[in-house]
Amino acid sequence: MRSAICAGLLVALHVGRLKDEGRAHSAHVSLGKLNNVRESARDLPRSAHDPGRERTQ
Image (cartoon, rainbow, N blue to C red; front, side, top):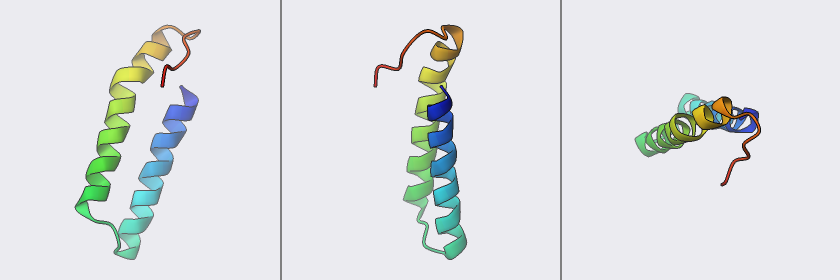
């Protein structure tokens, strides 16, 4: 669960840095959000409910 949260934070940090440099496109933001929401909404609540469960992907 921690690794998924860290990965989402790193994606957000990278996209934020690209945006600060003026190199981010709307697709970067959209794909970052999509990946982050997909991970968070589907997998994290399951693993939080069952701490012994391993991620399948």
